[in-house]
Amino acid sequence: MFQSLPVSEFEKYLQQDNVVLLDVRTPEELEIFGTISDTQLHIDCSRPENQSAFLDLDRSKKYALYCFHGNRSRQIGQWLDAQGFDCVDLQGGIAAFHDEK
Image (tube, rainbow, N blue to C red; front, side):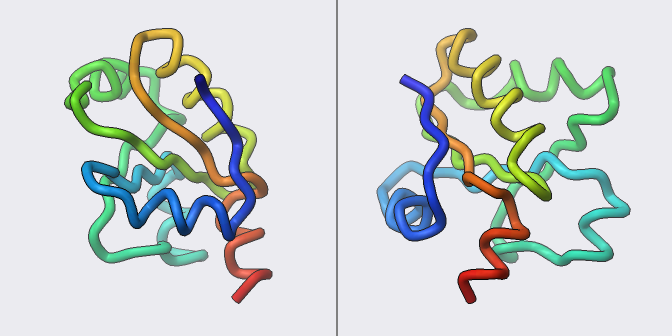
């Protein structure tokens, strides 16, 4: 079942085995706001042609999604959940993550 997790719970989720951190922001947002981790996957959800990239993800893994404010990652996460993926998103996005640090 899909969930939006606050920063502290999201960080705990990332510590589990088999979890992939997935950034769904635009390349411009990546440059401006940086990333949570150097070891993350990036799929720009603003580009319709990238929808197939989401469906090509390994379904045996869990995904922790984030964007800038949490709106796009929540939408993508809900859609991925409906496609049978195990995923959560970061409530409030990278903005909330930086506010906590």
